[in-house]
Length: 128
Ligand code: GLY
Image 1 (cartoon, rainbow, N blue to C red):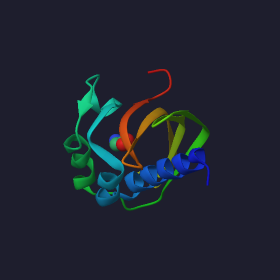
Image 2: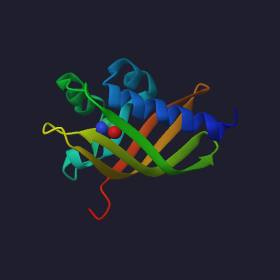
Image 3: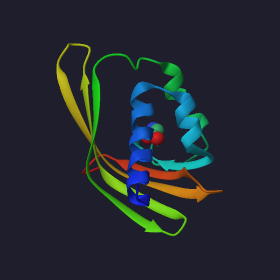
Image 4: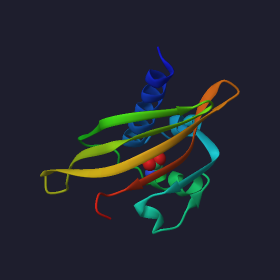
């Protein structure tokens, strides 16, 4: 497996654990000092995992959902890599109707002691 393939695999694992609400895997893949810009942060740079744990603790991850990564790009810079792509989230709403949301994502990974860990991400809705 190339490093690019490994990073795409790890990134997909991260997205899957978010979709499944699997906090243990999220913690395993993320550095405790993870920084993030995402819509939920209302323009603030969020640091650490507590902010994200809040959503895992809410539960409600059951039901039909699917995550698709479109046009992924991996930029390797030694022990740091940026994985960027468009993420499509398909869901079924409370009314039973399916809908899709789209996000631009850039996720930064750092190799620490031979193991890739997620250290920063930026997620925004197109046009936001
Ligand atoms: N909201 C958590 C994540 O996208 O990693």
